[in-house]
Length: 381
Image 1 (cartoon, rainbow, N blue to C red):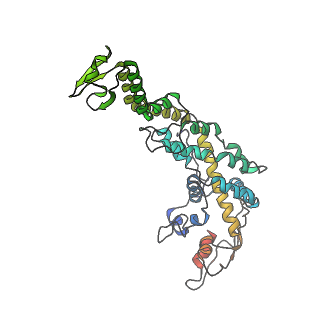
Image 2: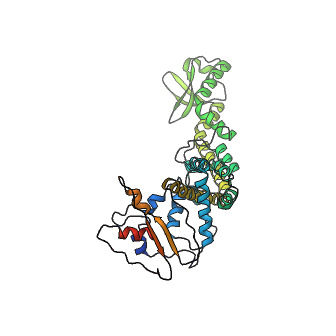
Image 3: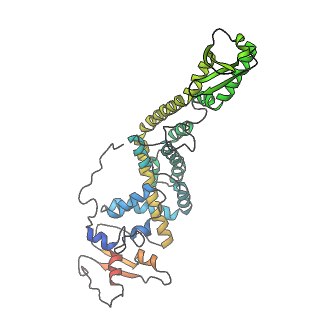
């Protein structure tokens, strides 16, 4: 499933050394190494594992391209503006399995029936996501919608082949959906109704031979047998083969019973082998669509992260920054997103910032301990 290499050049992302990442508490706190209290904790309202991984990646590698930043910001702004679409996307994204990891397991051959059904259930969400993205007239969100393949045909194939809640192992059978394979259904019928088939054979044999005192039995040594009372052994047909003699009866095997015995005892092994073969065929079909699945998963991850940003922005009343290539940093009423979120009973006091490459190249911050100097520096960073 690794079909391409992504490479990036210096200058594409901001290089953050380990000390900067720790002090800014981007993904974990400085003291407790916990997610709560970090920038990731504030911004992560993602609904999928794919989106959560992508958000962490974006935080650790900030963009430097003005156009790339603007494309993301415009997408977030559109989602902030369109509240209905944002809420509908949250609903559509909720419950989607990790398509990237699931596809990896399927390609490696370590996936089971539950993984395949989880992938199918994830695909079932894709048409709704694409429908919501189609509401946007243009921009990055519309591009993501065009990139997102709903994969309805593939989901239909998986749904037609596998039961909704298959067992953990694909080596034990009972996961192919009824009606998908005539042979699987036939073998299951033999397993489920073997006793009825033996009773039917017993009734027909009694009628055909006139032997009233006979019954079909089973033991582990001889398998299935026809037991006839010694008083009626003279009615036994020529084709029957004697297997065992007891005090009051003789035990025989007929060709019909022999065939039925083979059918019943081999049905379990046959159906398990056949179901596994059908699963392998389904796996090969899914593997042929690995590129489309990966593209759709990547699009879902981006939509999830952008929608997470929009959700946080709307709830926190954040404004969209105007980013350019100048050397001017101008922030009006800036707030530290994490500290503001951690405050329970008091409001965060906002602060302005103005710096440039002229007279305001640097600033000296003074004040007593616990006055907020570090908070101010970190919120600007």
